[in-house]
Image 1 (cartoon, helix red, strand yellow):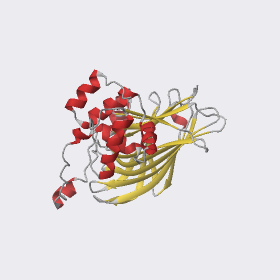
Image 2 (image 1 turned 90 degrees about the vertical axis):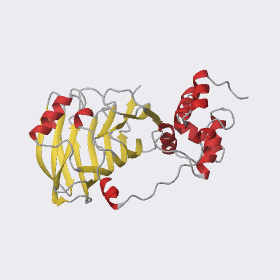
Image 3 (image 1 turned 90 degrees about the horizontal axis):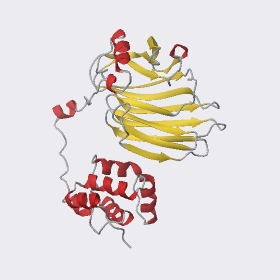
Image 4 (image 1 turned 135 degrees about the vertical axis):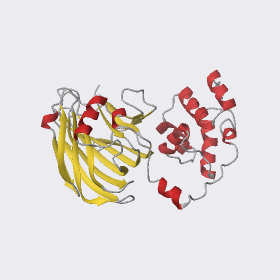
Amino acid sequence: MQRSVPPELASVLRTGPFHLALRTALAARGLALHRVREHLALRGVRVGVTSLSYWQQGRRRPERPESLRAVTALEEVLELPEHALTRLLGPRQPQPQPPSPPAAEARLVPDVRPYRELINPAEAVDGLLAVLAGPADSGLHTLTHIERIRIGSDRRQTHRDSQHVLRAHRDGIDRYLALYQGDPGSDVDRVRVRAEENCRPGRIRRDRAAHLLVAELLLDRRLRAGDTHLLAYGFDDAPAPGPSGEYLRGFHSGAGQYVLQVSFHPAALPVRCTRFATRAPEEHPYETEELTLDGHHTVHLVGTALRPGLIGIRWDWE
């Protein structure tokens, strides 16, 4: 028997747009995206959590035949009237033509937000970057970033390791600025910076009150616009007095792909882990998803085509 449709949901099903109707229906039924994926799989429909997330954000729309079948199945999973979602899609959108060469070159330059909008306190970030003469636009953007965080037996963060593929969107880039912020109460003076592959350490500046550090990683060549560079680096943490509860990564110019893995000591396993994304510090997350700890005591997230903002994992100990 089909459940009644709440007035707010009924209204948006009449007016659209599709992504808002889908998001409202998910909220009304109280289903997390991974649960929706499982319900669809039981109906023989395969669709990823990332696709569902993009659909409800309006970043992509289902157009391929298999995607349209998934939307029809979604109507059943969410107990909506027949065609309630599919009719909001309307006719298929025309495919964009390949850009002309000048437009293609312009696409090298990503949207950029100032670091101060992604890290608190903003004044501390501004001060450290001013000392290092760091521009608002570093000239680099992330193609792929794989980051591994380790939590020790005392529930505190011990290490951060990064493998980072960067692309230059202007000429003359010969350094990358890596930002580190510790948990409240941590001693940033004790943090050790490791430059491990295809880079060497330059200047390091710290703000004790903000638990903030900026490390200059020098590249072995000057990059021209369009060049890529792979580097590996890490930080040995100076743990805070209390247990860690989350790890958050900010992207001031977005990212092609970001992978974050958090590994927990077998003697210190959380009871719940959640992926989340937000546009600014202290702002309410616009996306959350519960994660399941695997047999190796790790959880991970994969983000693709990320806009400037913040994404991370938080965990509860009890």
